[in-house]
Amino acid sequence: MPAFRAPRGTHDLLPRDRVAMARLERIGAELATRYGYRPIETPMFEQTAVFERGIGEVTDVVEKELFRLAPRSDEAESWALRPEPTAGIVRAYVQHGMRTWPQPVKLTMSGPMFRYDRPQAGRFRQFWQFDVEAIGDPGPAIDAEIIELAHRFYADSGLHDVEIRLNSIGDPACRPAYVAELAAYYRPHAERLPALERGRLERNPLRLLDSKAPPLVELNNAAPKIPDHLCEACNAHFAAVRDHLDALEVPYRLTPTLVRGLDYYTRTTFEAYPAGDEGQQAALGGGGRYDGLVELLGDRPTPGIGFGLGLDRVLLALSAAGVELPAEPVPQVVVVGADPAASAVRLRLATDLRAAGIAARAELAPRKLGRQLEAAAKDGAHFAVILGDEAATGHAQLRDLKAGSQKVIATADLVAEIERADRRHHHGDAT
Ligand code: AMP
Image (tube, rainbow, N blue to C red; front, side):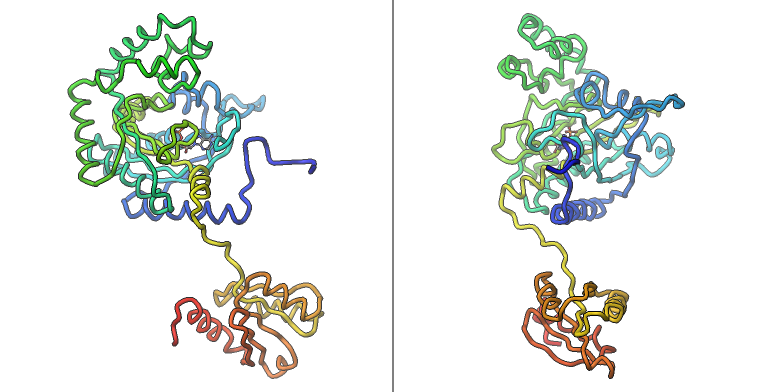
């Protein structure tokens, strides 16, 4: 047993995993660029109030899962690690006066998020999200555009069986009456509710709808459904979102119990699940409209919509679906030599190759040539450059480890020759 391990609920991304994660980040960044989103990076921690106000105090994310940083005695502010990207991005929108920019302001970010949750399969204390936010557009067309973008991300990453669940949770005009009705529905059962849910019954009954505590699973089936209580404007908005999704041929399942865990959502909410998976843990991403959030964080009322996609879970789902991921990059060339002690000469040549843009490794250990060549083959390198007696005349042996061929070549021609042979190997290109 090693003395130290990564903290509970976190996991090291070893090179193979990091390459797979980087691929997802790249797919996300390229998609977002194509859809007109621009990159932003906000700090990994914010003043706690940004999350308390922005996400809502009566939510799991703030009540139970916020990673609070212990303040030093000389600091008056209190900070927390970001549990999700939206609150920080909207804080930046307000702080930098982005309402004077052309609207909507479309921003994208990917990186680690932190929730002090009970760790279990697919639920980590540090996890990666890919996120997009469009601030300043009331929809409904952009709602559909953003859901289509999420849908395309999964397909591009190799997941084809993802179900989009869709709901509308109304707005301040219609939700309060619905919430009152919901509370009235639960109240007679208050005695049977677990303590947390009982507390929330009066403070935020909507939260009970996504509780998985045993008595609630059953109660929720018969609970009043929010789509039956939408005001005319929310109804029209929701119908238009569906029409746009139909026009884009994005399939979705209407899910009247989908309320999302964060307080700031209004109207459109959606989540993505592996098709056929009924578990909550499996959500691959989710998002929605947050028309009240900009105002909550101190600016004039401004509509917005976004989604966050859990990249760790996408990787788990890809692995469960048996999707083959790209291999780790390997050196193209390993420079080896007949004189085990001449590591400086080998290193010099590798440095020149790297400067020319070739992924090269030099054998640095003073071991026998045979051993050096074995290690090069094990690395998966395409070529070994062997420095021997010919080095005195500016030549080397170039061995193609894949083709099993070898020839003498002027070191000055190495770069051109390696590039040519590599092109032939990858593209069957005869030039
Ligand atoms: P949420 O804002 O909670 O809906 O989170 C958005 C997405 O992030 C979820 O759909 C998950 O894919 C992912 N996610 C949320 N919490 C975790 C976690 N603790 N561990 C791993 N992924 C998570």
